[in-house]
Length: 410
Length: 174
Image 1 (cartoon, rainbow over the protein chains, first blue to last red):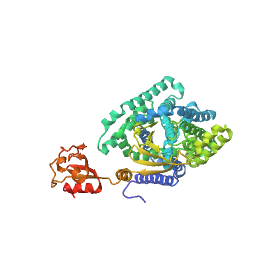
Image 2: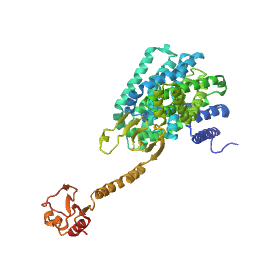
Image 3: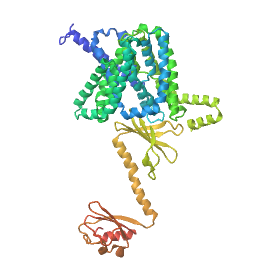
Image 4: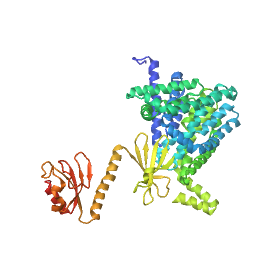
């Protein structure tokens, strides 16, 4: 029996799109109840969609792909909106040291594992990026839910996240060139050009942001909506063409927007960002072949454990530099364990370029494990902090231990 | 990222620490006389969070309270109003039997347009005119007997309770 008022293909399409959206609504509800960021659940929803419900080919691939692309653009654009030039400058000064610690400690495990299991350099570099970058989205939600925004370790934690985002402005052009040129052989000079273009654009964005922002500002919400969206997408596209990667272009466009313009654009685009980013995460999940996961699952778990420890150490170190006691250091370290949207962006770039078939099946469970693990262990950070300081106390000289006790327990 | 605000050299105001929170806003906090720490996070959007730090874990907040603009205005009201009254009553208690009064001169006052000397307030009531606030807001501290009392001006009078009451009657107010 056919539905009289529409061609059956259109009706099916609408119903399917609607059901996917309802699925995302259910995922978001569940996330809210679990007091968790919805990102991991969108991923699971996508895996279910792609493997159990089966055959997302009923959708036009182009529509979903465009939606995913816009999702990445909006994610990065809104991230750039949130940062002001001053934020970036002061963070560079205060968090440069922990940032290097973070980069070395957390990039190497992914890189090393990738090379060890026989992946090519490009794929291993992608995996390094996946393990390196913590999820600002998941962590922001944790901070808000657990009332940690005012805590004294929070600036150190945020500093690390800001530095990671800045490093992305260099890392993403690098991998874009590597993917296009099939490894470093594509030309060191191309890589250097892309890197310098990115740094130059960042400096220009910070320097001329306020002027450009006042020029673009308009009192009508509608005008602002299309201006912001248009600028973000066009700049991202231009960046992609210049081998600097769309994500970096969108991020830079976001940094240019400042002041009242940034605030209003952020408000207007937030729902769109939520929608398209969810489409992106879901689509990434849908592309994962569940059958390919078990062979690499143990690797994902191993990587999760190792990089959880490295992130713990990173957060611990950063917080200790800020003069925070053991419990605060534990809070910072445990929160940093969470991976999420950025790791999926990096893996997504690799998957859509077809760099390595095992990349998706390894990264998806890795992100899920770390995001969930972080949410759990960070709620036990007090116990972890007390345990760690008792270990230090029993080992170190009495004077040092007293200092630790005084700061940690007073 | 942390610096003490220079204006806290103001007498009676504690040292305020200011910390930028990238992508969130700014945090200000200080220590109370009892050693408790109180703070405020101001988001870039304007929303604020009141912070009360934990005594046992000084890096963590024991409680955070979200405040919107109306909440902040109300809190300011609650914190601010009693202060002014307190200061006045402190002043009154500091010298027993002392009253301060602000007397606005109506057009019907017998001394509107006359000088302070002509009103002979000190001789008649014992109260002193310590300041004259002109209708437009200009303040004349320690006015001389030759200063004119105009309609709408306010006389700030100090004296015994009885004296200030008699001054009000004299000026045609009470």
